[in-house]
Image (cartoon, rainbow, N blue to C red; front, side, top):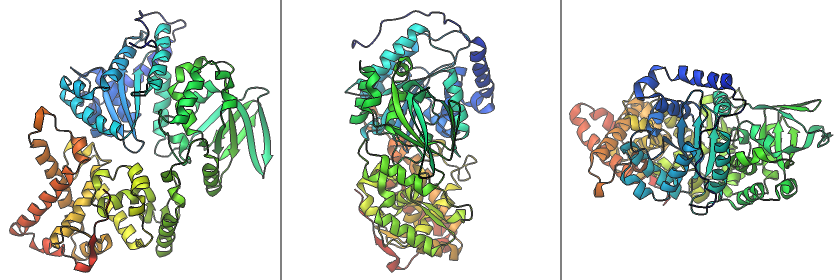
Amino acid sequence: MRSWMTSETSVESVSNFDSARLKRMYDKIKADISQAYYQQNFPNDGQRFVAWYVHNVHGQDKNQTKFAITDGADDKQIDAIVIDDEKATATIIQGKFISGAAVDAEPLREVLSSWMQIKNLAKLQENANPKLKERLSALSTALEDDYDLHFELIATADLTPAAAKDLEAFQKGLAEAEDLSAALTLVGPDELQRRFDMALERDNPYLSHTLSLVPGKYVFMKIADTDVVVAAVPLKACLDFPGIKDGGLFQKNVRQSLGLSNAVNKQIKSTIYGDKHKDFFFFHNGITAICHQMTVDGEKLSMKGLSVVNGCQSLTTILSCSEKVKALQDTFVMFRFYEIPQYDRADKISTATNSQSTVKPRDLRSNDKRVLALKKAFEQRYPTGAFLAKRGEQAEPSKDKDRVVDMSSLGKQLMAWQTKRPNIAHSETKIFDKYFEQLFKRDYTPEKVLALHDWMRLIQKRWTPDNPLGFNDTLLAMKTHAPYHHLYAISTFFAVGSKQADLVPAPDVALARARAKGIEEWVVKMAGKAINLAFANAANEPVAGGKVFSPANWIKGKASLSGISGVVQTQLAMLPELGAADQCAALELPPESFEYRWQAD
């Protein structure tokens, strides 16, 4: 054991225990988990509580939630594993659903135990339950891809004072570990309520916040007809800002968190835990926040439409050290608050102020000449449409929503269709760093861009809770990945149907042909069935060495591509005998509409 691990503590009574406050949160969740979904899919209230959190706070749908839960016999102190490919994070959750009594240090030691076991995933898998074995395979892949690791202890009661001290020590130990650094967060009753409220606004984040200014430590001014407040803000007040954990506060930031192992973030942690924490204000470049509307009433600063455009690394690192930060006195960080209602001006400020950590190429691709050329060509060809290149950018209400294309989504579609690699289409890091040059070509026509968008719209209509194509529940739980395999399967149908299996069809020619022949819906349906059958075939194959079949690893591996391609070829060979000869003939495209796949590996 390392020196920062504390000794065992006994359960202590919490002074001024707010039983009414705790009971309100407990009763709210108790009522929510009485719904049929939780009662029918999870055997006890402990699992239902974790499922409630995964579903409502982490935003996983019902199938994804069932897939994430690992609680039960041989769960190795891991109740759920949520992997977010968009944010490149892996979150391990331990839940305590209790009424009344305070939580002692035992759950914290369980979290610590799971962290230590994760260092040897192969050994951990040996005696884990089947669901955990599957999720550990996915976790291993995520860690290999440098995903940020988070531990969350969720509880409906407060920690005892002794356990709170242990939490601070454990946070520091996990954050500073060289072999496997991680963030540890306590999500207690108040934080549960706050995150739940924030989750309700996730689909349309418009954050408001009121900050208490410290007398004598702020100044209000007007510069270039813009209201500005510069303030020294207590470090512990940063924990109250909404949208740090889920990233909603950083929508206009050119990047999200770079992880706890980032060099600058290590320095921030070192200052927080060191004896020079009162100098944090002088060591730090400051945080820049913009809002649509800002008012100062006495010493209350109220902001609407709040967004931090420079300070994501700092705030996420401060949150990861929350227990230590809460105890700091006379420790401040400088904030610059600007009232900036104009989108274009806000974007320029976001790019200009990000100098504390190196801005990676993917953060600034929205201004790349190839992207700007695509945007200009698309919006000239389709005046009622829009090409959204910036993070958080929104189309004007007058635009045709069916012709609003997002650059990030286009990159994923290009990866699935043009490179025939849907297994890595989920990774924005690969798209905007490693393969950007191959994917974003200035001569890619607006017609092809819109065709990919239209194919994807047809596909997304099938990946809904009512499950019209009868997808396997596990496939539905992987809807951040599998729809791009669906797009790949459609491309494969046209390629194989045209006897050009090794080439890639033009998406606009394929869509025009499908519409002209009336097979648009049919080919989407058949492609969906191909994925389902390929997945079933893979799941039923024996796995070498006694290992467990991992759906997440299958969907991210090339085996899924060969499996889907094989099923498509079999289907097309059989369909004429089943009365679908006309549909098969309609798949044939002229040779000039094909090209070699773009190399992406």
